[in-house]
Image (tube, rainbow, N blue to C red; front, side, top):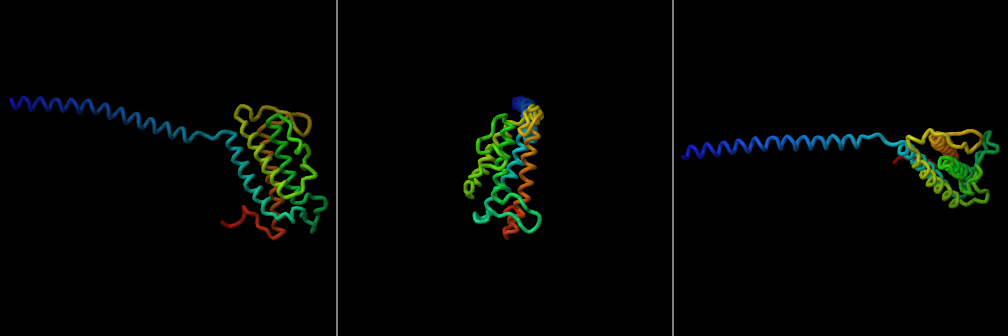
Length: 205
């Protein structure tokens, strides 16, 4: 009797182990499937809008910090030592980039730019450092809004050229925004250094 009972218990134990094994395998498959899915999801390529906006934020960070580094009494500074006749002064450089940001972004959005940004140099009456920097920051906010609508589907579709006849693309206007901003940032860096100011982006942390 004892032998039979012992043998029966052993058989039951073997059966439980046989039942547990498939469950363990199934749980392992589910776990590694979920892990693979999570890794695939996390490695998904960024969208066109995300790539462009990252570049815009890089420009914004460097450009705005450079604008804020110049004291108000130097906003009218323009180089004179060399062939600099007729160049924009420091404040005018900022207004020009801000106005251009509005125009490029408005083209992407297919709408008219704000009245303050109708020309390429911004409002003539805007003179104070605080007003100019606000105009600049607002232009970047507007440009982020425009970049957010760019997608793989509409990036290269033709849109109206804001500067003349023919058409351009949203992707083209976005890359123009970045390139144009960094072009003027390079000039502002020189203006700052001519006044003994190291641009914030170039300072040692």
